[in-house]
Amino acid sequence: MELAHIIVATDESDAGRGAVRTGLDLATRARGQVTVMRAVTVHAVPASVGVVVGEDGYGSEVGGIEMERLDRWLHADVLPVPEPVKVELGIAFGVPSVEISRFAESQAGDLLVLGRKRRSQFTRLLLGDTADAVARRSRVPCLFVPPGTLSIRRMLVALDGTDRGEVVLRTACDLARAIGASLSVVTVEHGPQGESPELARATPLTRSAQLEERVQAMADEACRERGKARVEVDVRRGGVVEQVLAAVEEARPDLLAIGYHRGGPPGMIEAGSVARHLAHSAPCAVLTVPL
Image (cartoon, rainbow, N blue to C red; front, side, top):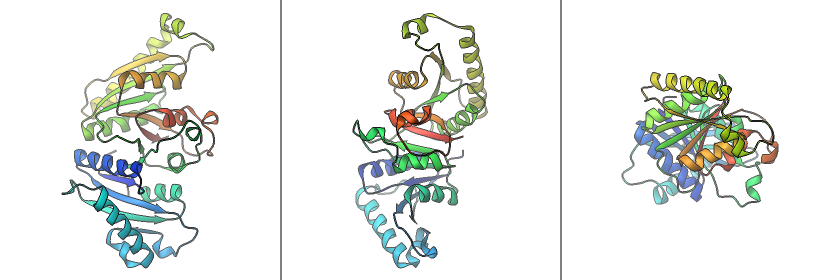
């Protein structure tokens, strides 16, 4: 991931403002470009205005109105003066979760940034929102930014110790190198069902050492190739979600990077994967890397 082109999907909300500001900060540090886009929900529009970018958006009445609205909002309420990097604008029409993912791919985005809205205890359990749908569809790594996030300086990568984790680690290393962030790794070994936390801490296993050795070697290789220093690997034992969230609580990273399988229906967190639990429960920004 070169981080040459960052796509920010936004709306006129606090979460949308946060996403734009974080995207601008990342682009400034990585010396990349930014396209800020908005998906307009419609049932049917002429094919000629399915997606509009930059000045092309003013070639149609519908695209022009929406582009002008986005431009006014950004310059009145979000973008600093002077702008740190050049910002292109884009509009897509259709189902937001589909069009946001499609837009990021069509514009050759390296990273897709979206805001995470605050949730109540009840609504936090519902995964039928746009953010979840984008994570399940996107072929582009997605960064979900909670309110209050601006600059990402510390990253924690959650790995499962398998070969597919290399994709997550390499993507995270690329991002850390591009923006000058620090990086550490956590991995969790499953213990016997019902094992108490006290017993898990007191019972070192040979396979725990082997897991740590494997993940450490993977991390060192990935970071060495990208000019990063040796990273710290934290091996834990117990429930994956609980232990990763405990590591987040202790390390206080600005970002948690996880692998995310594409596809699957929306639904309750309890019916979802470990990644879905983490994406909706982590208090920090979450980077989902498509697997």
